[in-house]
Image (cartoon, rainbow, N blue to C red; front, top):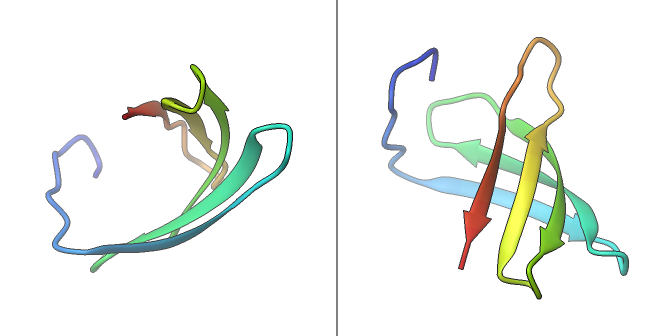
Length: 65
């Protein structure tokens, strides 16, 4: 967060995935603001590429199984 690694104690969230493997996700790390993302599932379902959609942010990443 702001250039500092944060180890969140708990994270809640929801996601919606369409049949074309794209979707949206909201995560709520304990003690922080809600983060909103668009994502696409790739690599036969073993990886998610995501981009934060909140104003004033530039965050992208991936999650792998």
